[in-house]
Amino acid sequence: MNESQSGLRGRSVSPTDDADRAVLALVTAGQLDALQELYDRYRIMAYSIALRITTDPSLAEDVVQDAFLGVWRNASRYVEGRGSVKTWLLSIVHHRAVDAVRRRRPTTELPEREDVPPPALTLPDIWAEVAGNLDRAEIATAMATLSDVQREAIELAYWGGLTQQEIAERTGTPLGTVKSRVRLGLLSLRRALVGDDGAEDLAEEGPA
Amino acid sequence: MTEQPMTHDEAVDLAAAYVLGALERPEEAAVRAHLETCGLPHPEFEELGAVVPALLELDDSQLVEPPAGLRDRIMAAAAADLAARQPAAERTIPFPSTAERTLRTERRAATRASRFDWALRIAAVVAIAALGAWGLNLQSQLAQAQAFDRAVTAVVQAGAQPGAKTVVLAAAPGKQGAGIGVVAADGSVTLALRDLPATSGNQVYTAWVIVGETPTAVGDFSVDATGIRGLTTKPATTPAGATIAVTLEPNPGNTAPKGEVIAAGVAAAPPGATS
Image (cartoon, rainbow over all chains, first blue to last red):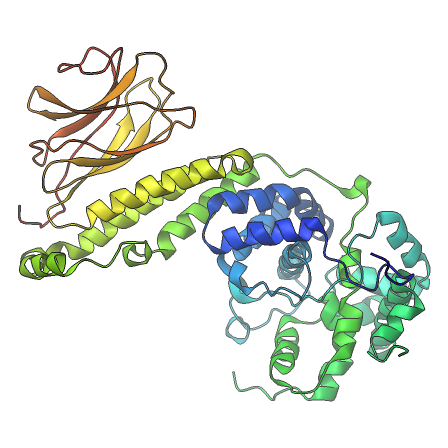
């Protein structure tokens, strides 16, 4: 295919995505084998993410188990076009891991139980990835374009499980500043990964 | 539960924190509720959210293999969940023909008390099927799992008929092979068997109905490398309490077992059923 220079813009669907969706369809149909297949495809990433957030191997195991059971019970809620199965699955792991560390953290005020949907039903929203197959080097390069305070804010939020309010307290920074650091950091990351073309794509008004 | 709905501007203000998961969960739920109900577009969410998956790409140095036992725990939990969530009615039991329905209506009064027991029994059968299915390795053996599924479905269908009895066949000590079966009103046994070593040469498995001390051969069958076999035996007199056994015979056509028992179980009427 002779697409435009920016190969990233088309949000290509990789064969892996297709295969994952086929496996997920079987999971939806209640096929245990398919769940096992999905587990084997992503167990390392899932566990590594959970471990990085919780820094506790046994808590990380609980998180991964929770997440896969969540997928098992809610596979039908995966929405095609809202991102890959992989991202969906790993976002669930991320979400559960953050829940786990927040629950463990005594300083965090726990939400009233009845105010939130039961954990099995809270699935994070995902969006189509900025690009299908980024390698780690590209991402590291993109991360390097962030300022130190932007990177810190994103890391504390994403890997530390802190809320932006907690980040403000932890870093002695006004909440408004934390908000804009997170936002500008993500935008900067996007620019670095997609290129300026991609940022304009959002307006959906490319040159005729 | 009657919280103030979030305004569009409030939601947009929280977009970056939302896509990173950096909100308190109730706040996050309020944003989600807004996104689901608000008619306006939310390009900020797409724009910012699209880069978040990139954050999930860890370095090789950060990748860790989970403990081996985790897979088994997840699969066991999922199997239990499957068994719990599927009442008998959801399993594919075809709608009975008119004749069958008439027959059932006649029997309904007599068997009413037992219907819940039946539901439990079938659920148990489904649970066994589910537990069995995940042990099979998907990549090469999905078809095998499906074969077992089909065999189990046949058993469940047979079990839905009036007068049916169930049997769970467990492996004999030191043997491999297990299954479930249903004895139909005519005494034939529909079996779903798995984990049986493949037959070779002249070998066959033989199914027996044993009443008292007397075994009656009700069918010979072979098993391929999948170890899975579904079959329905010849009709025989099979009262409740009869033993259903499978032996591995050196040759077909034996009227008394020569080989060893591989798996066996006792046929049981549904509790409360009139026979």
